[in-house]
Every structure is written in C-alpha cells, then in structure tokens.
Length: 119
Length: 512
Image (cartoon, rainbow over all chains, first blue to last red; front, side, top):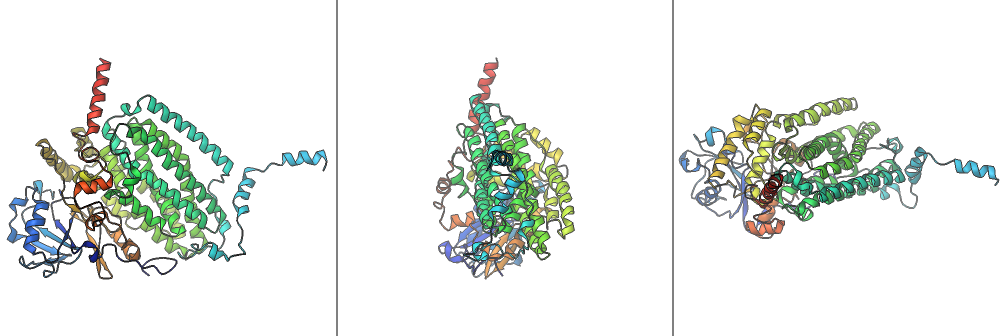
C-alpha cells in the first residue's frame, strides 16, 4: 500500500526526468563548508563532461569561499549517492554513473572551513 | 389551553445543555434514502473503528447563539484596539523595525494556514458520522476564518509603512519557503478526517501550539506591538476550545477500539515530526528576529514540549500511546536548530519577502549565554565572518538553489542528530526514482505513503522545470510577487530601515 486512499490512486512523479527539458538534476555538497547551508541543485545535460561540471558548475557555486582557491583537486575525495566514487574527469555524467537526482559530495582534506569550524 | 399551562410553558425555557443536545444529537439521524457509508464516504477507509459515535465528549457544549455572542464581543474589542493603534501611529512605538519581519513571516506563513484550517474543518465537519464532532469542527471552521481575517486586518496597518506585506495569499502559493507551511497543511487536508484531526487538532493545536503562539504573542507584547497582542488574545479563547477538541478526538479513537491504537500512534509520530519541522521558522524568529527577546527556543522547547508534552504522553500511556518517535532528535537539535535556520535565510535572503541581518554584539552575547554548549564554538564564527564581509561591502549571498527535503520541503540544512558539523542527508528509491530527505522522520513519512509525496511541488525543481516565471532570479522574484531591492535582501540598507531611522530621528528632534 503506497498511499491510504478511498480508491485506486496513482499519479506520476512530479520530478521525473522528462520534466526537465533534456536536463537531469544533480545535487552538489562540499562537506565541512556549511557557509553554504545545504547541498545545491542544478539541471544539467547528462552528456556534460565531469571536468566541465567541476569547472563551470561547482566552481561558480563555491568559489566565494576562501578555502576554494586552496583546494588540491587531486586530493579531493568524492562520494556519489553515499558511496565512494572515483570520477573520470573526461567522461560524461551519465558514463560516470551520475544519475537523475544523484547527490555528489566531496571532501577537501586539510580544509575544514573558516577557523576549522566546518563553515 | 388555560392560562396556567401557558405560564408553565413560558417558564419551561430550554437549558443550555438541552439546547446543545438538540443542536448536536438532535440533528443527527440514520439515513434511509441512501446507505450511511455513501453519505459518509470518508468515515472508515483510514482503518479507524468507531462503535458508538455518541461516546464522543463534546469539548465546550457551545450553542450557536452563545457562540455568536462571545465572538461578537471579542470582535468589538479587537477592532477598537486596531483603530486606536492606527490613530496613535502604533507602528512607531515598536522596539525596532526589524521586529516587523516577524510579522511578515506570520502574515505570509501562518495566516494563510488559518484559512486552510477553515477549509479543512468545514470539510471534516461534513464528513464525521457523529453529530458531536461534526458540530465542534464546524464551529472551529468559523473560528479559523475569523482568525485569518482578523490577522490580516491587524497586520494590514503595517503594510502602509513596511515592505513585504502586500500580497500574502499570492506569495503563499508560490514562494519557496512558504511551500513548507502550505505543503504541511495540504498533506493534512488530503488525509482522511481522523488523520486531519490528529494532525491539526492534536499534534499542532494541542501538542505544539504553545510554541507558535507564545513566541508570537509574547514577542509582540515585549516589542510594543499591541495590535498583534490583541488579536492573540482574541484568538486564545478559541484555541483552548480547539485544543480540547484535539485531546477529546484522540481519547475517543483510542477508547473505541484497540485496533485504532497503532494507527493513531503512527499519525502522532508523523504529525509531531511535521509540526516540529514547520516550527523551525518560528524557532528562528524567537532567537533572531525579536529585538527584545522573550526566551530562547531551547528554553521554550524544554518547557512546552519536554515538560508539558512529557506529562501529556505519560497520561496517554494508559491507552498504549508512547512519546512521538524522534522526539529525542528534536531535543538533540534544540541547541542548534535556530542558528542553522537563520543561516539558511541569511544565505537566501535574495529570494525572501523579509529581511535578515547579522545580530548585533548584544544579541550575539545573548545567544552565547542561551546556548553555552554550541554558540561560541560553532555559530559565532559564522556571523563574525559574514559581518566582516558585509563591512567590506561584500555581503554573502548563496547564488545557487538549495536541495530540498521531499517531505517537509525545507532545504537540507539540518545536521546529524549526533554531529552538528555534518549535514543529515537521507534518501530512498521508489519506482526507480531517487528521493531525498532532511531526516529519518521525513524519510519514514515518505516510505509509508510514497505515492502521496512523489507529487510534492518542490519550489526549486519547479523553477528548473520552467513553471515559475522564468529561469532568472528577477523573473522568479517577479512571479513570486517579491519586489527586488525593497522586500528582499539585508535589513542593512533596506527602505524599512530608512523609514525607521527617519522616524527615530524626528522623534528625537521632537523630544529636544
């Protein structure tokens, strides 16, 4: 029983992939940097190359944080939908397994926000 | 018929109890043209078993004539106060114009709920089989309509001078953070009549209402807003009737059949959590938006939920009801909730119909004192950093849209119950689609009825789907009805601040 109702009740998911005009949703989260209060959401083409995501989506979202310019990108640890993830920077989101409404988190070792306060 | 019997008849006026009996029990009957289950189609599908509708204890035994009389008296008093508030420029006697931002939240986020409550109670007031609960719900429906109306009338005075108050109904249906109260109430209204009463009459009105009304009404009194205090008083006697209905309906369900207990428990768990999440904006207001503070959120939670709620659930334990699931999580969050939420609105004030600001030094000291375990450690450094940016003319705004919880619709800003430095991020899959939640509480609610919440109108996703006026911030603000540059952004530099400073200066000049 997926809903308590007086009669059969079935409606399509409001956020199905086909409703985003050719894009998919991707959520990004920079751990230990709660100056950005929540993960951030973007509609992106699934053919977007991962490196393009980092340069042109993730960068503008987070670069106002003073830690951003100190990130050593080769040390960054990624998590995709809760599992450790080793992205291929030249492959697309789809080929990297980044699906619709996937959450992509990253940790930047040595950088824990302003005054190491996770902010 | 002789003269003697005439006199006797005249003297035999009905007592209050009898009149009430005729109004309720006397107006209910077993239908014969149509079967009862067709006349009352929502009465049984939720699984609640009722064997004797007459066992329902009526909260106040109020008859219509008494009802109109009481309400009319309250209206007269309220409108006299509103008139004198307007004539005496009451808006100039509040503690500080920042206070008005609390009213903006109230008018756009709470008053429309009163109207939704009116509709909800009118609906269930038709659909209960028993005449007792039907009449109680119908009266509450009228109360709620009155509350929506008096609140709008009271606060409309501020609309003459301050921004963000011009179109609460329009905003309520569109603005991202107002989808939190809107979806809360729509969830309740689309449930069956018993769940609706558990949600609104019991969990919200009975268990959590003090956490809504005490901050707003005491906050108004502390901050010189006598108009709002008066509508608070005017609503208060209704609220006590509503609370009693909440408790009576719970006891009624629990006493009617042992099979009802697990259903009611699940509703209590669900609506405690939904109500608690909804209150996070009120919590923030208590700690950050009242220039003169009443008490901290953590103190209020301790008094009104942990102590008062503890006694209530102890009382209900004889029916087999336990404290709501995740009440322990709410208590773990009490020292951080308001700081996380204020930081969120500070991030996203560009898209809000009220202002935010960095607390001043006195206010920071108050927060340190009230939150000795967490504030200096985790939150003061945030505000000091943001303040230094603001002083350089680089006020921080988050330029990306946040991920939202699929149930409460709040951005995913809450932290792990046992670690205030890590976001609490939960997810599940349903029919091949991913869904995200801010907490185990919201995730549980989804997992019990996923088909209901796959339809959530999540404001961020709606923007991306192209349903909110356009793809750019100015287009979305326009669609929201938020005037860029006056309704939104920091209090510092706002037209509200300018008009307030002008008044203060002229008052000082007048005083010599």
